[in-house]
Length: 107
Image (cartoon, rainbow, N blue to C red):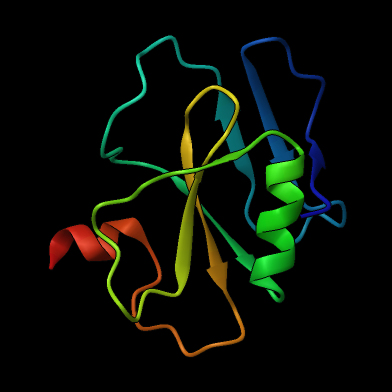
């Protein structure tokens, strides 16, 4: 994303902003709650080359999630970070049919 800390963070909290100051910030906080089977909040990472990005993330320690809500036309792959937090890698190269877990959960 190229975001940078707005100010020095600590072990539990940081706010990231675009380096030019234009655009939305993202606050990240460490949580002590247990990982949920179907999380209410997650990140979607949009990738020009979904397969390459998934491979890169797997090499960094992510794991594939056996997600029970995939549709045949899903444009995303669910992964989990090293602590089990789930996130999606969305394929930007195809028209979005279902672009997040949340959208699938509503149907």
